[in-house]
Image (cartoon, rainbow, N blue to C red; front, side, top):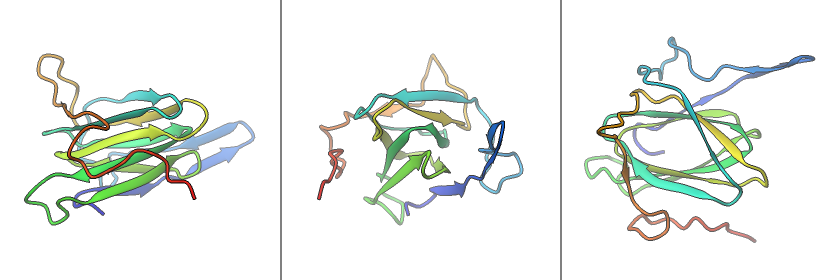
Length: 151
């Protein structure tokens, strides 16, 4: 796994009224602080990526549908420089994925309905100077192809 990336198994507690799932607690080992909480979505087959942050650590939880979340370590001083990680997250694999600064990330909805990601980043969004650095999803130097591998 890419250096600094962590996952947390999430426990879903169902009963006759519905379900409860804690995502991130202030007493978790991987808790680093709170900036804000937001959700983002992707429609079936849509790729959102690539980007990275210089300050912010992201904490992704897919709460509806399934996403293929892909990370690429572009940090030359990292022991995992050049490594790519894939995570299949969502209703069938409830985990929190923590993504450290300077690690490129993106995701693709792999279900037939819109998928929803909740992010709990360590920094609030700065509208004047966003901590977001982007490259195109398909035309770049990242050694990854978003197409599905059949077979």
